Amino acid sequence: MPTKPNLIDRAIRSISPVWAAKRMAARFSIDKALSYKGADTSRLRNDWIIGTDSSTPDAWTLSTLRSRSRDLNRNDPVASGATETMSVNIVGQGLRPQARLRADRLGISKKRAKDLTKAAESIWQEWCPDADAANRLSFDEIQFIAIRKIIEDGEISALPIMTNEPWRKIKRCLELVEARRLTSHDDPNGIKLGRRGEPLSYTFKSTHPKTFKTTYKTIAARDDRGRKKVIHAFPTKRPGQIRGIPVFAPVLTYFKDLADYMEAEVVAARVAACLAVFITKGDSMTAGALSMGDTTDAAGNRIQGVEPGMVSYLDVGENINVVDPKRPGDSFSPFIESILRMIGMAIGMPYELLVKDFSKTNYSSARAALLEGRRHFMSWRHWFAQKFCQPIYDLVLEEAFLRGHFDAPNFYDNRVEYTRALWIGGGWGWVDPVKEVESSNRAIKYNLSTLAEEAAAQGRDWEEVLEQRKREEDLAKQLNLTDEEDNES
Image (cartoon, rainbow, N blue to C red; front, side, top):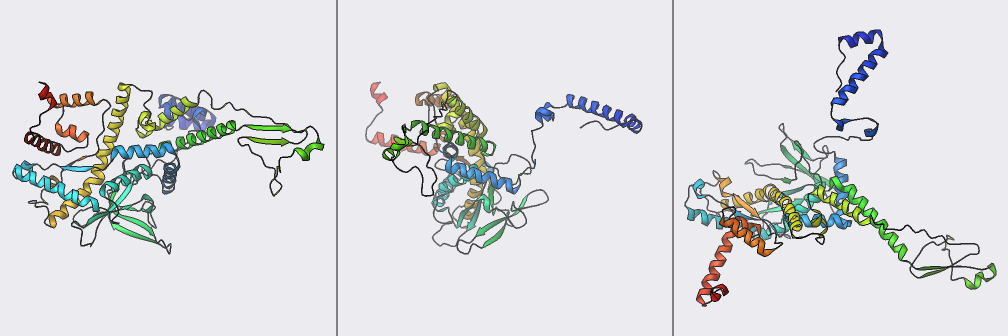
């Protein structure tokens, strides 16, 4: 900001406004020279137009971003593939909890804590297949849809409602609500905030499928005991942000431009692939004999087109000029690759994973790409587990306790401890199984990792692994079987 006029400047301005203006312009130039070049507004940067800078974009902007993101996921192979890759690596077949009850914190014996751990996991496994309020989806499928909508729309809302169906052991179930329905009459964002910026209520729009009548329903954010009545999950990037933004928002234009460019190249290739013969007539007397058919449609418009194997006769005096664009050029592949690398960089996905192309990599570079992608997916997985899965796990265990299915002493005094869990997903697989297994083995041996961590990296429960190994070893002893290594020794 330029320095304000001082007493001398005001005095000069009263005598000679032109002189005063020159002094102020010189001072402003000095201020700009000492400031950030990124704020330069000279001729080279006068087309850098800055839009609104609010924490949450306006409703029209968000609606446009979501509509374009959905269109890309429907019609663009790269965008659709990127969404699928992220969803599979973040959620995969579904995240599941490993209960982590601590006996010393709960004041109970280790055996009692172990029994409660197994009970909590058993209750959850029994609830998951019927988690959907519409009785169609399991919780694993709900997770997959939720993460896809978070990537595509930027957010998802889930309503943990109670049902009266007698066959349900746990009455709590989930209803997913898309982002477009979160709106109200007076506020397009559909969220009423408190004085601290906390959500107080959410308003959802519904349209009747037959009458097309629109209704609005407002739901409190929490009940009297603090339970969440609306789980609104979206990645927060700015303080005060109340709505989610599609993951592809920074690269929507790149997706569109790349798709248009690819389509133009495909059309050019199709035209170049057409073998056409054009015959020029020698004189007008033979026009009727040589005509191969009408060249106009029913309305008298001349038909223009090229197709494979076409033979066309031209009128007297007509000639054919062929446009040869020489496409695609040598820069086609590098250009496409550069665009894809920028898209991958913006959404946190290595190029190799984005296009599923490891043909140009060796073991080291492939492993580096996979590890970079894994860090990104693990960050997403941790966020999704805490924002979406954990609140639902809390509600299910609480209801199980109230119905007598989870015998947890002083549950409400130690609720955080009873619902404490580590969420694990599908395994990552190995680039080189021998090297990876040896690395894991040494990490455990030198106390750099644990069996629980290594098993979780492969999507397995370490206790289940040990129990299964024990059963196999016992059966091998009963059948008098030994390992091949023992026989060789």
